[in-house]
Image (cartoon, rainbow, N blue to C red; front, side):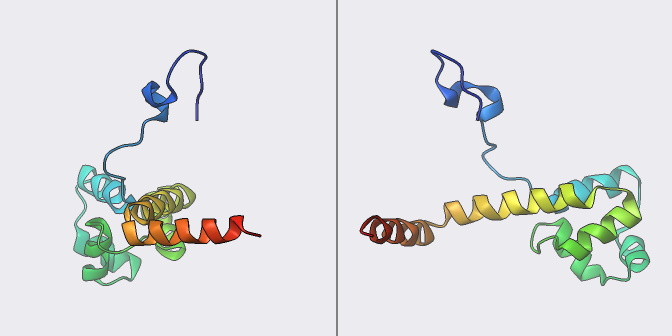
Length: 114
């Protein structure tokens, strides 16, 4: 987080988080659309079912390490970048889960007792 004297860190553009996190599948989807590739053809090339690829591209399935490496081989997208995006997406989703956040708060309270 960037901090500057006299400025609220929440008001610095580089500290802002998007309202909706970006799923790495959206990046891959944009890339294949820009290249004019067919999802079916790409799925076939990668040895993956069309429905699996479609679910990834529509943020209904996560990008795993192996699928990230497959996208890297097929499209030249950096696998580590895709995995970092997936991790950030997962963390944002976990932070929006109110029951999970309450559970974390209870764990913190218990941990403070020790």
